[in-house]
Each structure stands twice: as C-alpha cells, then as structure tokens.
Length: 369
Ligand SMILES: [Zn+2]
Image (cartoon, rainbow, N blue to C red; front, side, top):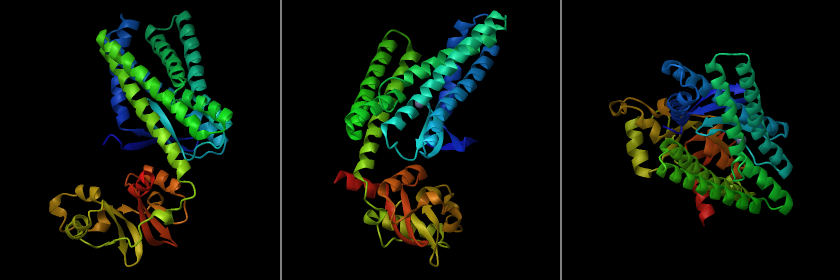
C-alpha cells in the first residue's frame, strides 16, 4: 500500500518515517538525473558512473530535505509545539504538528525556518562547488555539489511561494492572521492562493507537454495536483478544529458496543459479526478485559483455509495508545488520533473499561449536518 510507511531514524527526539510512495519518487529522481541532468552537465563521464552520481545525489538531496523539515520541527519544539513525527514522501516531507500554533508569531518563525535552511544549504553547496572546481577536483564531485546547490535553491524558493500549505503560504497566513486577528479568514485567503498557485503549475505543465518537455511537464502537473489537494485539505482541517472545540468524545461516541470474545474462531467471527453487523472492526474482550481491536483487513491477511483454526486474539491489533481515547477528551484530539492509527476509529475507555467506540464517520456526520 502506498500509504504505509516505515520508521527510518529518530532525530532531535522525532521519529522520521518514510512513505513507500517516496521510493517511486526516489527512483524517478535517480532516473531523471542519470538520463537527463548528468548527461548534459557532465557528458564526458561514463554512463555507469553517472548512475552512481545520480544515486549519491538523490541520497544527499533526501538528507537536505530532511534538514529542511527538521528545522521546522526544531523551531516548533522550541516553542513548545509537540511534533509527533516527520514523514518523508513525494515532495520532501511533512512534519506532523500535534496542534496548530497559538499565535501568528510562532507560525511565522516556524514556517520560515525551512526555506532558510534550504537556501543556506544552497549557498553552502554553491561555494563548495566553486572551491572544488578551482582546486581542480574531479568533475563528478562538483557536478554533484552543483546539482545540490541548484536543488536546494529550488526547494527554498518553491516553498516560499505564497500558497498555503507551502511554507510561503504559512508565512502569508501568519501575516494576514496578525493583521486581521482572524485565523479562519487568513487560512481561507492563504489556501485560495495555494489553489491558484496549483492551477498555474498545472497550466505550465500542460504548456510544457505541448512544447515537448514531457517529463518536466508531468512533474509540474503532479506538483500542482498535490498542492491543490493539500490546500483544500488543510483549509478543511482548520475549520474542523475550530468548529469542534468544546465537543467531547462522550458526546459523539456509540455506546452499547458490540465486542467479540478473544477465543472466537475467525470463521465464526466473519459469519456472526462482520457479515451480520457490517462494521469494519470489533473490540476484542476476554471476560471483561479489553485486549485489542480486530479488523476485517487483518482477517483477510489470513488464508481462508485457516479461518477454522485461528482465533481473533491471534490476528487482532494489540491494544496501543493510538487505539484508545478517554471519554473526556476533545473531539479534535480524537480526530488527530484517528488520522494516525489507520483503522478509522477509537475505543473509548474509562478506568480501563470499554464504554464506547467512536469513528471518523461519526464525527464527519456531525460536520455535515
Ligand atoms: Zn517547509
């Protein structure tokens, strides 16, 4: 699955994960470098060495993008905003903020930190290339550093485009927020600009394709589509957070939860629960103790022949903090947890006892009503 990711390393106390989709992009970057960029920048170098250069450059580029995200996270942490992790994917990465900044000043500092890092790296690699060149270093070395200079400038400048949720859009939002004292309005304006920017990129991409630069054109369209979706989603998430303030999990959860016994066979579980009630998952109990959550997805992973011999407790998701929430928590907190746990729901507990269940749909229904 493209949405799955795995943990790479922990830096500044922040877990860094990589989305599988990132590998596709990594491959594309290496391909573009080996067949498009280096043959022009260093035509006398043999193709196998060029491939190696492309690989090294892509890895270093990835490190630079990580530095960009880490500098956002560093400023966030200094301002007591918790960061739950950094995920590297298509266009570099995203740092996951647990909550939005409380004031425009913090947002401004946080947003500008990333582009400053990228521009500083650009300057560093520029001078490094110039020095390597004047000291007569082999061409493959300063071709790589030259590329990194060029790309870090590109990343820094691209992120400064004033469309939310790009860094430039966040800077813009913080300024409008400061002037108008209205976060909702500031977000609306900044994300409209983000969408406008997205349409411009898509338009430029189409022009590129008609002019025969297929790969560049596709890249632009791809970035544009992504930005358009991100602008829409971040605007909605700000609205949701504002609107849901004060509503507790208790107010929206489903009581009288249907739970399944831990020792039930998968065949019976499918027959008597999944087909009958048509829920996507059930809490698993042993006597009165909550053990975990079993999803239909987990059962599908088990070959059908084994459904008659394996039990719910063997395939369920073990109880973890990201599956649980207390009834007194805010709905916005529940939504954040749901967004991370990939099962679309949370078990509601009180004194370690299961008292309800809440799903993303329960919350969305409220928003649509
Ligand atoms: Zn950034």
